[in-house]
Image (cartoon, rainbow, N blue to C red; front, side, top):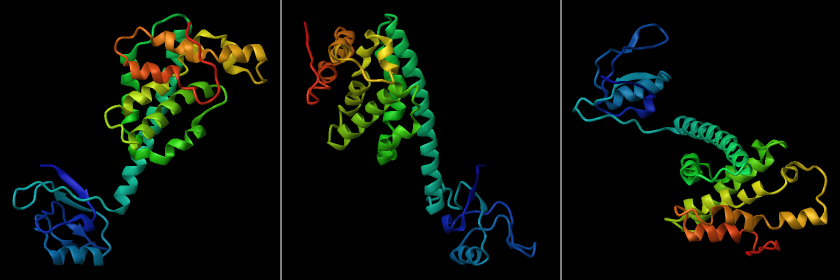
Amino acid sequence: MIRLQVHPKQLVPGCIVLEPVIGKSDHPIIESNTVIEEHHIKLLKNFGISTVEVSSKLVTGLDFQPEKIGGEKQLEKKREEMAFERLYLKAVKHYKQFFTNWQTGVSINIQELTTLMTPLFELVDKITLDLFLLYEYASKKDYFYHHGISIALISAYLAKKLGYKEEWDKVGLAGLLADCGMAKLNPAFLHREDKLTVEEYDEVKHHPTLSYRLVEHITSLSEDVKLGIIQHHERGGMEVVIH
């Protein structure tokens, strides 16, 4: 038998009390094995009882599934936020390692990236506007890698809200891979504290093309995703050249 700890507000007639409910006088308000009725619920509320141990089965034999109350909802939201933070920081860490591998010539593994990002994509609806506060997690040292994960999440979120029910996660993946071509540039560009020279900036402008070249022959990646990668600066004035 599964035991549930619930608030009196969550009780319904037919719940079975498994342990005596003790009041301030150390005497039971309700005995064990009592089948809850409406007057029991009112009594528990009047005595300020916060927790009652009941069976997961009602007296009728049906499953008892307590509804969430205000505090429970807040707790659930907190759990979701903590899960999101944990998955987000894990994704940044792994993305950094993937990027380092790409710098050495290792091919992009779409399956690994999808496995990494899918749990985060599934949380974007629940986290909502917190997505736009992701910069608070970023450190100066690892800003580039936070940027990659953040763009992926915000892209997926916006695509989903715009009604792309089947493609929104692919849009997120395009956002993640948009800057993968930076792995083929001078690594110093990623961590420069002063401004790039005109020549260096011209070189950086070619990163959409470099990103496209890294994914061009990956058959598991759709042409739409590849197009999104190469066009991700199309409206920003950056030069995109395919030779």
